[in-house]
Structures are given as C-alpha cells and as structure tokens.
Image 1 (cartoon, rainbow, N blue to C red):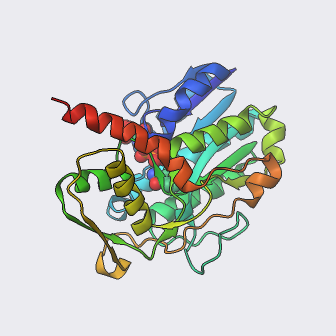
Image 2 (cartoon, rainbow, N blue to C red):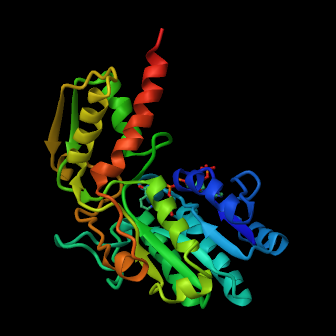
Length: 302
Ligand SMILES: NC(=O)c1ccc[n+]([C@@H]2O[C@H](COP(=O)([O-])OP(=O)(O)OC[C@H]3O[C@@H](n4cnc5c(N)ncnc54)[C@H](OP(=O)(O)O)[C@@H]3O)[C@@H](O)[C@H]2O)c1
C-alpha cells in the first residue's frame, strides 16, 4: 500500500515514520520538498504519489504566532487538509488527520465529547476546527484523532520548555488553571497505528464516528505537569537549578493567544469503538523522562 505522511518531521510525524514504513510504501516529504501552504504543490504531489492512505500529522502549531500569521495558519491547518480530503473523497482514499483540544471553548469542567460543537478561543484552534469541518464535509473516508498537550523528549513543547528553564532558574512560575491530559506523541502514534492495523481503514473509519479523542487518561494542570517533569528529572539524577514551581493564574501570564482552561477530552468513544484504553498521563510520562534523563546525563558527562 502506498502511504503519504505529511508532517513527518514533527513530534507526532517522527513517531509514525517507522510503523507506517512497516505498513506499506511510505512517502514522507518535508517542508522543503512539499510546502503545504502551496495548494497547487499539494495537489500535484497527491497526483504524482497517488497514495492509498493519507496520514496528516502536519500543522501550523505555533499557537501564539498564529495570532499574527492567521493566513499561514489557515493555509496549513484548514486549506491543506481540505485539499487532501477532496482528493481522497474523489478516489475513495482513507485520510487519517490529527486535531486538537484547542478547537473547544474550554468552558465547564467536564470532559469535552466529540459531538460538541467547536468554539475555539484562538486563531490556531479556529484554523484547526476549519480543517476538521472541511474533512467531515468532504465525503472522504476519514478519521480525525483529536489529542491534547502533545509532547516528546525533543523538539519544541511544554516538557522541553520546562526542562530548558529548569536548567538555569531556581523558581518557575506555571499556570494552574489550565487543565488537560499531557500526551506523549508516541502514545498518539501507537493509538493511530492500532486503529490503522485493526482492519481495512474504509470500514474502521466508517464505524469510528469520524472524530475520536486520543490522549492519555487522567488530568493535570500545567503546574502539576511542570512539577512532575521537574521532580521526575531530579529523581533521575539530572542537574537542574529549580527549587520551586509556583502556581499562577493564567491572568498573570498573558499570551497573544487565549488558551482554553478546560482541555479535558472524553475518551469513551476511543474505548467503546476501538477497545483502546490509554495509560494515565503520569505512567505515559515515565519513559519520556527516562529518555530525557539519559540525554541530559550524556551532555553533562565529563
Ligand atoms: N503540539 C501540541 O501540543 C498539540 C496538541 C494537540 C494537538 N496537536 C495536533 O497534533 C498534530 C501533530 O502536532 P505536533 O506537535 O507533532 O506538531 P509539530 O511538532 O509542530 O510538527 C508539525 C509538522 O508540520 C510541518 N509543517 C508545518 N507547516 C508546514 C508547511 N507549510 N509545509 C510542510 N510542512 C509543514 C512541520 O514542518 P517543519 O518540521 O519543517 O516545521 C512539522 O513537521 C497536529 O495536527 C497538531 O495540531 C498538537
């Protein structure tokens, strides 16, 4: 089977490359070989590769920068998935796409369900919601996996930002009123692969309900997540300067993009339709901290 993976160099994309290679003949262009904001280039690539499965792990993910670059965010997060979906719909090709908790308003304190109408608070969330809607309307056999608070041992994410600050600062100030499920990229990749390998994606996607949440279980505030990172790395012998992780309300740390306070995602559909019950976020964090600690120790070794 010919597979096209977009975003192969991102956190999630990197975790998907090897398993997708085992599934078929993988084409995984990078931004230089295929700029997704160039719609004609994307159409040409689809026509020349003629994939039998499209996996879209690419996105414009800089949430704050999206506020000043909405056009670019919409081209990558809405227009490109729409082109993929229309191409896939015309040929009956399954499309696996990835979306975000930021499509929801974050109101209330119960988990968001897939059936909830998106009400994003920022441009990134709005552009992702537009991409999801375009895919849902396209008629393509599709599955949208919505995840939250994605991180990895490397790259730009919350964990690596905390690590970098903790190397030099005695005190970290982290918001405690944004609640979600920190989710390693490898976990979402494993869920995606389990679903892809469960049978013919045409049938699997048709019974999925179209959109399915895929995240670790349990919830944490950003502050709790930061504490778990710092404590976990100290326990693993990493040389960090941080002595205190202080709780602050989001109002004290203004950012260009407003963030949802409640990013809880209901995982009932994932369990009911696919029998997948992901681990708790603390359990999922452990192997990532092990990997980070190994790298940190190598760096500080004489
Ligand atoms: N990060 C999170 O906290 C989070 C949370 C919930 C959901 N998600 C969703 O999960 C999915 C994967 O996110 P991630 O964290 O793995 O993202 P990421 O690490 O930022 O990777 C995104 C990928 O998209 C590529 N890309 C961006 N603009 C492009 C363009 N114009 N042309 C070609 N490629 C382009 C990037 O290429 P370069 O490597 O060249 O930059 C990168 O490989 C996305 O759909 C995202 O919306 C993420």
